[in-house]
Length: 350
Length: 64
Figure 1 (cartoon, chains in turn purple, brown):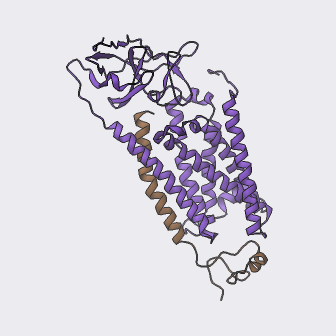
Figure 2: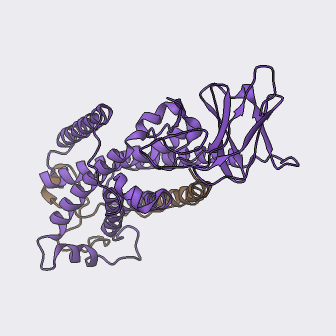
Figure 3: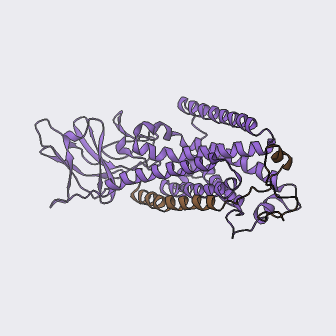
């Protein structure tokens, strides 16, 4: 292997996260089962478990999808982003139990093998009420399996961050398939408005959050700044950048983070090498730019991670004139040292 | 996040949101007027269902 394999790096935060997650899941399954038994005492154990794990997976998927845009819109949700993959893997496992039980319940006792029966027993593609919704669920499960199987950082390193991110955007296709699976499956039989209302509310919430976050990001992407004769672009005033923090601007279509630290300014790419997190929303810790998502660090003057780590991000030339910050939008190769601009108290700098 | 990923996210949801809304509306509108044959007819009878299809009637067709 070209990359060393490391088991999960358990930390107190991760353990707490997983304990809470496991407890919430167990509590939900217990409550759902109790409520169903009270309302429908005639239900069989298999049907109860199928519905319990199916609804649990659906709720977990909505939570997973909501965390991203929530963290974009409000930084207080960032801690939920740190171990979101744990949530995703748990959701896949719940969906797997649901799928396995349903396949056994409805397809295991016939002449054909269960998977063949699942794929071939219903071909009514011309009817919405009789649509082969189980195949939609199977397709979603396969996508979720691919994502769960590649959720470890080993695959992130092997595939590179942009490819890994593109693969994991398959969650949106999986979500569409699962909404269709429920809408054309359980919703066709369920007479209570609760399921239809909950599913509709979930779709509206997830779509609304993503559209709101996308609108905010699009406004930042539309920023246009004119370059001077020397090619440098004025981005902000020195006093607009807090000590140890950054100002993020869009230059040449990409985000650039200008950090202020110890009377100096440095500019580097806003995109973390790990999972493309927003470096500019982090802060300077122990002299290093620290990504707010997973703590990856980079030296501000060179964009290189401190030894023994090897990640690098592109850097940008920066200068200060009359306490106004100017950045050259042409990125330098990742890890290129750039002399920081000095911020003097009397105004002006280099 | 890279600019390309941001654009992809925006386009995905601009397309997905109305598609999912249409799917939900279509699925609700397509629901049959009568319930499908339940797995346990005796249980449905206890629950008060009085418009079950008789034994052997194919789904989607009313009883004679």
